[in-house]
Image (tube, rainbow, N blue to C red):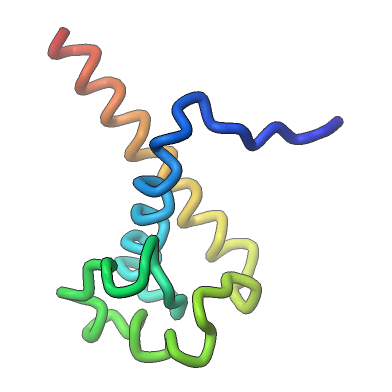
Length: 91
């Protein structure tokens, strides 16, 4: 079965990419890069250790375990569902 990674709303790609890096920083995962260089939220990255090791990884996610990568994806899904529920209740 082929995977279809096409986005229903293509404009959301950059927002999801930014969320991915922000969540990784919140979890203390050592990835760098971000949605665009210099645009990541680094307020707490120093104490979490996420940005400290970023120069050696250059935005790659391959050094992380499946569990670590899955936790980021799961958190994105949880936030998307919460946002949809909130929007649904407001309308």
